[in-house]
Image (cartoon, rainbow, N blue to C red; front, side, top):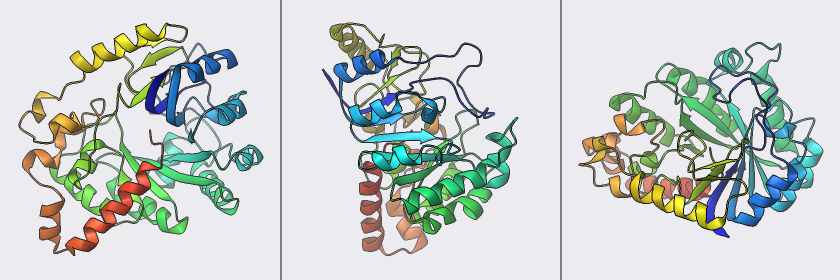
Length: 328
């Protein structure tokens, strides 16, 4: 078996929404069989499992996944939570729900409610309330970009307090990365919130932790078309396919790590690059990373006149919290 910290599985390409920024292709529908899922379980020894899609709550063998894999996070658009609540309650000791949103009702419904009559934002809020009432672990996942930072502060930051749940931010990979000043300001604003984090390696390097790109060594992804890749966002590099021999997959992983997982040229002068590897290479986060300008949490503490001991304690608590989540 191949040991991995995080195993990402796309069991199907089918979805009940048509989000404007979705990279799942239209046309042919793909679904992994129960036999495919069993092969994945026999091949990989995971600590966390992240189920994506399509919409995972549509998958007919979802309960088999919940019974078979460890520490499962289901990344969902949140529309089908009520319909699947009994299943989620049944397996709540082994499941966390990631509710995907945008920056407020207008952006969420404009992007995720595209070509539907569903009020996605308010449906997700109702789903969050149901999960909270039934003690099913959940957190929010929100995309950020230069045009929605004000809306995030107004509509998304308050969710962590309203639901006592985490809010994890990831960059829109179809958008231009933030400029350095905007990135730094966003980091600062996020750090002022409880249970909020930017789920990117350079953010954790910024706060003095061991943020790193996990693609290929700590994380492996399996797509609905049976391809095995280093990352769920890496659509180009293939490590193998369901059914391949373990030695083939291991050799391809080694080739990827030795020859292709390298820090970007832009990070060559950064002391964090050997571990961080340029943060998320798909989203090109390295282009606007404050660390390249030698600005980190220590500078922020001085600049904002923050209590150093309290700030470090809060970042430790935040890091421990995020470690328990499966985030994509």
